[in-house]
Length: 111
Length: 114
Image (cartoon, rainbow over all chains, first blue to last red; front, side, top):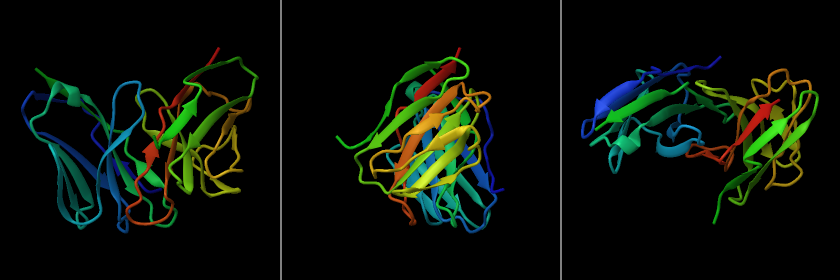
């Protein structure tokens, strides 16, 4: 069974700080990696996708991928209270194209 | 507006009843998915379909059924055989196979068994 692991948190950071969310995955051949944000009671919203090693930046968000270490992370710069949510890491299963989700990390940004 | 719609938003069911959850997309996506989310838990795949008139069981298909007669629609039936159906149900879609294949979610249906 392919696995995606995340620390459940909560991760608490002050407003304006950098929040660092981490994810490891078990399937060495995975090629596509996604970060979703889920507010309480709402559905997941895709915020970042990354397909090659290195960093990918989009506004305050940076996704980092290291396939050799089977590790993907999400950095949120200048964290805001509105960033408080659960962040889900998802990895594409190559042979089926299904997404395997982690259980999520709850982020709390306090003023 | 392109997107995924799910209805109803809230659904209450008596024990022993079958209920059907609707999922429609106008994104021209080939693949559609149903997930279940329990409080404080991750997403678990129920069924998925990568092409019309074909679908596959996910990790927790027992007690559920689906159909895919149209590209735009992928309804989920929660049958009386599903022992603990109270959960948040999420429908998603994407283009199908390929590297840059982002999956998008509908707003969800919250099912409660009375």
